[in-house]
Image (cartoon, rainbow, N blue to C red; front, side, top):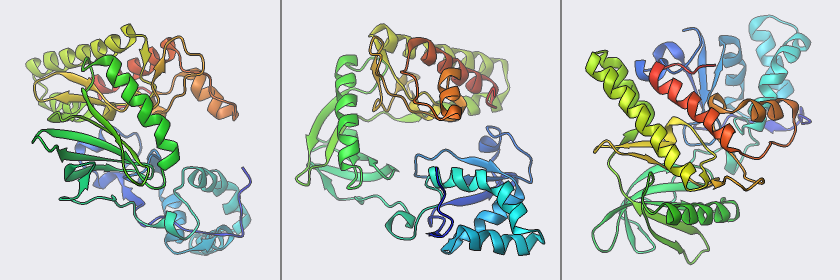
Length: 331
């Protein structure tokens, strides 16, 4: 991409630059890096977190207020007593990656904090909002109570995701209908609000994501906990096997998309990019730690990503199981 060195850019309000040394043990155990490094993250965005060194953290802090990239580099150069040209050579890959990930943006609407559109007590398609579970730029997830008093999880497109989320929500509804509650939440309803926003409503399941559940078992360190962790991983594998037996691929494998119910059942969630095994045009998403080699190679080379395949998803699931068993990522 051609980086515009003259236009103003800024870190969005909710971007966090957090020392690894200050992270909770549960989170720190998942991240490779020295205690002097920092995590760069925008909590409610789709951009994956990055581990950066202290100098990179200092450079990015220059953009807490709007500056051109040149102005930020000059200010940082003075801070570390270095030549701006040398700093540019070292900093360009970081700056470019932050622009691509929308961690550096033009001042304006995109630089504000990501806020949910609905608050507790609001109605969405007749369903009462209890709380927001997740708020992204293009979609939001709420815990709701239906008119019949049943708890549900409602996923809805945001105003900015009106067009992009429509096919994803329709795809997710089709997949959930096919699965009929097997290895996934049951679909309760689909709908469209008066402003054109699509939503889907699924059953509510009490529990926690697989990463949290596995961490709790690893921390116990007992023989019983090890057996429970092995059983949990086997159940995760069974859930993906159930999906594949239905001729489906998830397309977005990572621990937060695996939910462990209080009953112990494993449910896969977020089927917005799912597809059929025989569909050579299947799209994909995900977190870089779980990319298969062919996908990673295409990204590095700037080429179009290959279609998702059964073998690629098996690789991603294997990387997921490694993380659940061991804590750190395998690579």
